[in-house]
Structure formats: structure tokens, C-alpha cells
Length: 369
Image (tube, rainbow, N blue to C red; front, side):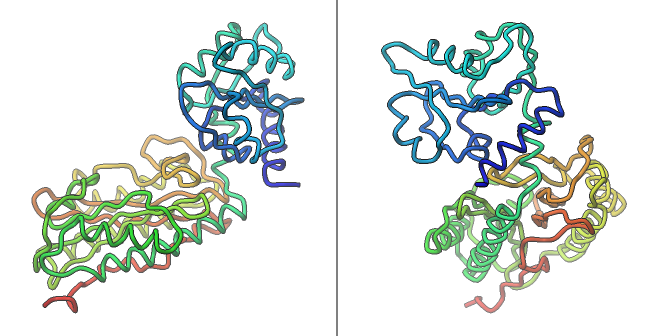
């Protein structure tokens, strides 16, 4: 059985368990995960409809030949001259959907006009998003996904190392970001994002890379990720050039302790909010609570950010094979920021870290002219 056939079978089991009559996915990572199809995205409606007895696509005719290379599932095609409505009606008939009050799961990432096209055809539908069906299945990674994520993480280690090794007085954030992105490309990956933050710029969690130049005594924060074989990486490390800014070592120690606390708390059956609490409590007790500006983590899979979200309000119960980040941080305006980010996969006995790059501060001193 292919990975996609297995995923479709597991989705149908989940649909039975949740009383779901129809799952409707738009062009998205949900569609890619379930079928391998990544259609050209524009305003022409594309839908994958799955019922207990049928799975098929609403597909613009001009995209059908390209999409056919990825799947054997049937297509109901439509052209610009006639529009999608008749093809959608045929697709719904093939799926044998009860029109009175079907329970329909809608892809929360699809275009609103695609969703409304479907819902207008099912006016009695009881609708919800994918959290307890496709989303729940995607949150638990299979062995092939783990292998891809591990490969991506190890490549990211090397790209991160290349960035830190290029640090020297006078280099700009943009130049270091370019070195990292070029490393991905040279090793068969695509850059996903790269944030390089010198000195006080590290106090902005989503700093935009600029022309700030590095000087002796500056802190450095690098948050970067690339994508290879369809799966991304994500990691944050910190360091400094020459000597550490005042207070850097103490703050780094607090953040490291927060990471360790979250890793210790992350176990199957534990609520995501309890993992967030474990990290946040360490930072609050050290007196930096107001400087921890974001959640402790997010899921990682086909998307850089996906469930489960490790927040203070999340009731998600963590399960074995879930993949997510643990990334507490402390941000001191006008000084520096320290965030240490690991991607982990949850095993029966706790989290396995995908990266092999140490969390210790990187001391860039041998590059000083």
C-alpha cells in the first residue's frame, strides 16, 4: 500500500470515528499530504472531496494533465467557458453525500470562495475545520516523515554553522543571511526563511534582516530553516563576537534552563499548555517573565507552523510521533535577545531532538582581524 493509500484509509477510519460524511480540501499542505497533488494555485476552484466510498478532485481542465502525474484519483474537470458548478455537482453525486445535513470538514487554509462554492451546494451542512481529522493525522508523523525531517534538520545544522563561521567585524546581517541561503541551495535545499539579528536587533523576535554591521562585543541570534525533499527545518542559536555583552551569559543560562524544563515536561498524555508552563515558569522565576514575548512552540511538518501549538491556553494532549518546536526566549530591548529553538519528535519516553547542533553560545573570536 502506498503512503497516500494508507493515509486515505486512516482518514476514513477517523471520519467514521468522528461522524464525518465529507472532507473537502483545497490546494494546500493538507492536499499534498493526502494525495501528493500540489496543483497550480489561482482563482480557479480546485477541491479534493473524500467520503467513505469515494475520493476525487474538482480540477480545472487546463491543470488536469499536470496534476494527473501525482495521483490516480478521478477528476471532474471543468473549463473556463462553463465554470465549475456542474462538475462540482457531478463530484458530489459520485461521493453520494446526503444533502440534508451532512457533517462536512472544510480545509481551513483554502480560499474562502472555494469553501463557499462547496457550502452553497450543501446548504444544510454542519461544518467544521480539519482539527480532528486530517489535522490530527498530520500531527503524528510517520517514519518516512521523520526521516525527511531529520535529514532537513541535519542540513540546517550545517547551514547554521556556515553562518556563524562567517562572522567577522563589519559583516552585515544580510551578508550572513545570504551565506546561509546559498548553503541550502548548494546542497539541494530551498531556503525557507533566515533571520540574522545583531546586537539589539535580537530583541525583536521577528526582526527583518538589514544592513546592521557586526562589531566586537555584539550578540548574534540566527533563526533559519531550509526545505529538502518537501520537508522544512527550523532552529535558533545565539552567540557573540569576541566577548559577550554584559548579562548575556546569565540570560543564556535562564533560557537553557527553560528549554530543559520544557523537554522534561513533554511526554505523551501531557497537555501542550503544561509544556509551555514549564518553560515559562523558569523564566518568570528568574525575573524575566515580561520579556518572554511568545508561545513556547509550534508544530512542524509540511508546514513550518502547524499543530500542535505549544501555548499557555492549548488543551491539545500531546501524542507519540508529534513533532514540534521548543523555543523559549528572553528579549531585552536595546540590548540583545536570546532564543534557543529545538525541533523534537515525541517518543514514548519523551522528546527526541532532531538537531545535533549544541545550544551553547557560539563564540566567534577566531575570525577577528
